[in-house]
Image 1 (spheres, each protein chain N blue to C red):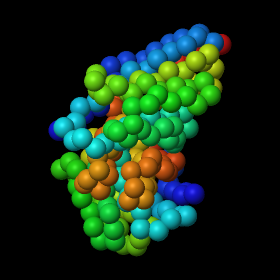
Image 2 (image 1 turned 30 degrees about the horizontal axis):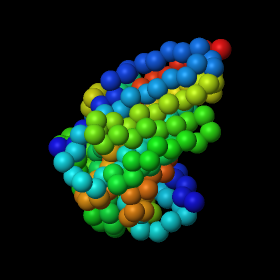
Image 3 (image 1 turned 90 degrees about the vertical axis):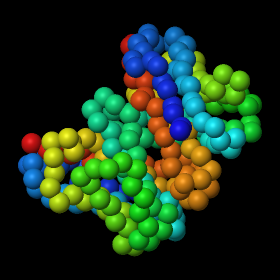
Length: 112
Length: 115
């Protein structure tokens, strides 16, 4: 079965600072990978997804970017954080069949 | 466009009560997949069930049951004899067979089960 590692679990960053969140997947190869953000008390918003190395699709225009340098590595980045970037960031993985996602444990980001 | 609506923001029940979480979805595709996920206080989402658009059979798993009705575009989730450990946020979700199989989530329903 798949396991997703996300780190860090909690992060407090000042406005204008850079961001790098990493997600790695074990137990599968060539998965589809996804970054979601969950604002406080709200649902999940899809930010990016990737169907392969170097292939990134962005769902909403924003201050963030994503990269997939290796098959099982998915990185979420920002050059300058905004207050509105605060939230709970979840990485998810799925094979190319429409089975349920496997989620990581998430990173709680607070921009101050 | 695809959409998932969970009209119930919060539900509070007493232990052993039955509770139904509502989910209504919108899509023009004929092939799609519906899911329910549970998010306990720890934050990590846990997959509960998947249903494809061609299978309207209801499903029961222990205290959990799901009612899928294409005629009303609904995929409701019932917990029988609720327990305190059922307290969590529950998300209904919709996935299409295209576009990287991305999944659209509803806003979630927070369930409180009191002892």
